[in-house]
Every structure is written in C-alpha cells, then in structure tokens.
Length: 113
Length: 115
Image (cartoon, rainbow over all chains, first blue to last red; front, side):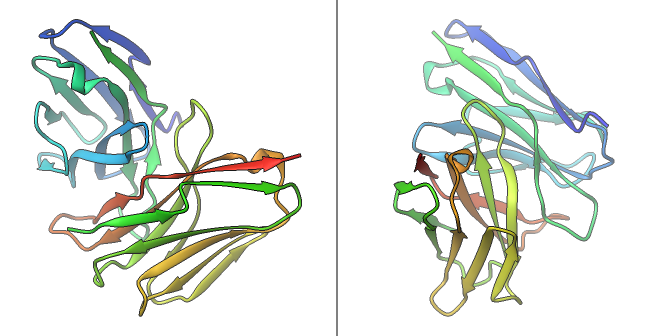
C-alpha cells in the first residue's frame, strides 16, 4: 500500500493563478481531510469529506473548493491564489470504523508570489 | 467549536531526562485525544492516543494521561533521546455530524533534547 499520496510536492504560483492539489489513498478509507499548516498555527482544517459524495467546511474554507471524486481521491482547488494561501497543505484519511486515527500524506509546499 | 491549547510552546531537556507536554481543551464532549510527532519537513505521525473512558495509556517510553474534570491531557516522554527532538501536536476530537468526528489541533510544541 502506498498509503496517502499527494501531488505535487512543491508548487510556486503567481497571485491570481489557479491550481488543484491532488490527494489519493489506497487503504479503503471513507473519511478524508485537507489541512493547512502555517508556522506557529498548528494544523487547521480546510474541508473534509465523511464519505464519497459528501463534503463539509472546516475552520478555514474561504478561498478553497474541494471535490471528492471517488472513494480514493479528494482534491483541493485554489481558484485565484493569494499570498495568504502560502502554506504547507496536508491531506489525511481515517479508516472506515473502529478508530479515529488520521493518516497523513507527505504534504504539498505551496508558495504564492 | 473546540479549542485546544498547548503549554509550553517550546521545551528543552537534557538527554535522559523526562519531558511533559500539557494540553487543555474546551469542549467537554470531546472523546478522543491523539498526539502527533512531526519531524522537520515530514508529515505528522501518530505516536499515542487516548479515549475519554481511559485515564492513562502507556507505550514503552511514552505515556498519555487524561483528566476529564479539568479538561486537560498530557504527554509524558521518559529517558529522552536526541531522536525525540521534533514538534509535538495534541488534538481533540468531538462527535460531528458526519461519519467521523473532526480533529482540532493545538499549535504545537518544539521539543529539543540536548545530548
């Protein structure tokens, strides 16, 4: 199993550009999450998906959209990137039942100039 | 919503000493409390967790204690080693409307173990 994978690993955008961060898991997990990590701020939830076909806002959803394409994939889209969205983005997933343990992907480091 | 705070924000200990990191949470409905370790440039990884029906849990040199009345939980690392140096995040999970609950993370503490 590859676990949780994310692409790309690094990205530099100019203000106003758009891009999609990809996340996939091969562990048959139902719930998936997108976080951003900023220095001194911990991990903040952007959006999550409890199951295929459903998505909900987290703590900091403004400026982002998500798509739960199928059970494996959960993408995060920045329609018009802003410097305030410079951050490290982590995707995570949780097994179907019996545990709340979140498994994280390797992260995407995004810089918006 | 839930609010999780970690104290202190940085901690430096001598190799071989013990380290204790404390977190407080605000929502008494929270029922799951994990601790994650993040090394520089890496992803967060779960090191230990505890549920609200348990007061203490131990795994080799690491232990977590929970005080539901005071709404705080602590990570204890004994016989610290240089490889314990990392950022440690606590989190609390409260029941949500979806199939699974959501985690609220503290801001993290940087632990440095001096050789």
